[in-house]
Image 1 (cartoon, helix red, strand yellow):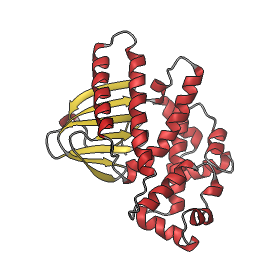
Image 2: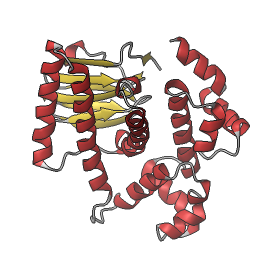
Image 3: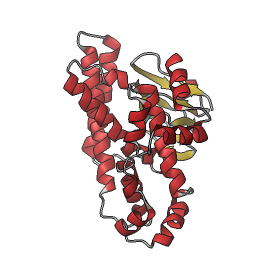
Image 4: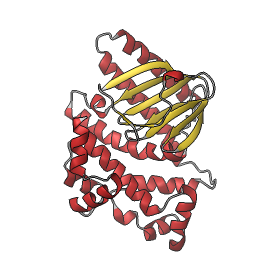
Amino acid sequence: MEQKALYQPFELYVSDMEHWNERPLIHHFFEIVQILEGNGKRVVNENDLLYSKGSIFLFTPLDCRGFCSETPTRFCSIRFSEVFLGQYKHVRERERISQWLKQLEHIFFHHNRYRELLIRRPGDCHMIAALISNMIEEYEHRQPYHEENLQHFVTLILNILARNVSEGAVTTETGPDQEPYRMLLHIHQHIGRPEKLRVEYLASHFNLSANYVGEYFRKLTGESLQHYIMQYKIKLAQHRLAYSMMTISQIADELGFTDESHLGRQFRKYVRMGPGEYRRRKKAV
């Protein structure tokens, strides 16, 4: 799978979809995309979802994403790295942003695989559109303090998107896909706590038979529970190795591996190289 890196902390542009490389690529940065005109489908992590004018997508690092347009499409792409949001002057603010980005990983990982991100409040749609419009103006004119303003605009947009996702998570609807959605969010929130990911705990927590949990999860997601959990852990480990200063031992502890060697064995199984080699390659890009 081809990959694409971001060579500066922040990038913003408005373009026609005909200039987009339609073949899905793995991108190593966060990206907010707003569709200004046109319709078609987005392809992300082998999942197809329709888009139209006004659609907004947020992609996290290591997502494989692309677009296939059906009518002439124009879009705004806002790309940024953790470095960009980590440029706040105060240590406490940088730490807050770092923790906040980890929370966003959990929130958006599910939507980028199984669901479209819906902005439920009309007021939020207007607010995001206005913020993006202001960002375009700030980025084009590069007035004093524009970088600080862009940081705050990005933070505001992400807060609004996160609010709409989290509201969907606690909805009182009882549709057939609602329970697995809650289960996925539970997995994301407790990915570093193995005792809360065991079949027995999930069965009790979600009022299911322990013998049925695995079959139920596979039926609704297309993959086994244990494979999903490990795949998600490895994705987070890849992100930490590429974009953080955490040691391999710290990453293993955070993600609930028994030790560094346990992480190494699983990492090689999924990525075909060890964590140390993966980090060296990413730092060399």
